[in-house]
Amino acid sequence: MNLRVLYLIDSLGRGGAESLLADSLPHLARLGIRPEVVALQDKGGNPVAGRIRDAGFPVADLGIARLRQPGAYRRVAAAVDAARPDVVHTQLQFADILGTLAAYRRRIPSLSTLHTLEAPEGASRESWRRRLAATVLRRLAARVIAVSDDARRHAVARLGLPPGLVKTIHNGIETERFTPEPAWRNRIRGELGIDAEAPVVATVAVLREPKGIQDALRGLPRVLERVPTAHYLVVGDGPYREELEHLAAVLGLGGAVTFAGHRNDIAHVLAAADLFLLPSHTEA
Image 1 (spheres, one colour):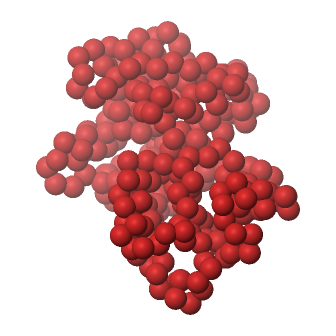
Image 2: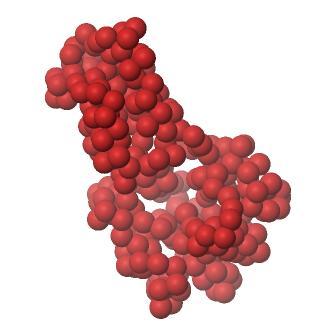
């Protein structure tokens, strides 16, 4: 197989969809797929782009700041023309709208991966974009991939996608990366200043309000009453970090919480923890 696939994604910032794309490309290439990646906009310098380039795959950034930006569609269409793909694979909202439309007009089959359970609600600009994306996928996409059965049911019931259009394909995990080495635990704890004997609970996430880390922080004082040496390790960065750090200070959590920021050695960090906590309000 020698299939040219153009992957269009909103950005290559630090997020789950972006990391999943970077992780999957080498495996897809071994199957005979020739991938090319185009990010519509820049988010935090698009750090995941470096990972993709290091793996040997071309990456471009179109510099589109907003959906209604003059010339936004023309830039996406030009990227499709330049890549001359056999298939266009879109991910996230802007790419789903502009990329699916550009592929359809060129009679190139397109598919999209849905990574979230967001639904159009109310009359906000964000809700309008979600409705538009759902309409474009419903009418123009050849296939829509859901990352879980719940995500598939959501796409059908809340987004109005035909059941036959949506297929569940679960995210793959390279499990061998997460086989812990004994040295990882002490090295990471020493690096972060966490006591070697402390019971450590870890959360790894982009720091956004729906991830629910604020709920874990509010519950931590009760944990500390029972287990005074417990430690909460928050790994990741994002727009909600300042609010979380302020909340931890207000609650007087002091040395019981570590905000480690973004890290690329997540397998090592997890090996340093005794328990993983996912307090998200919603996940696909």
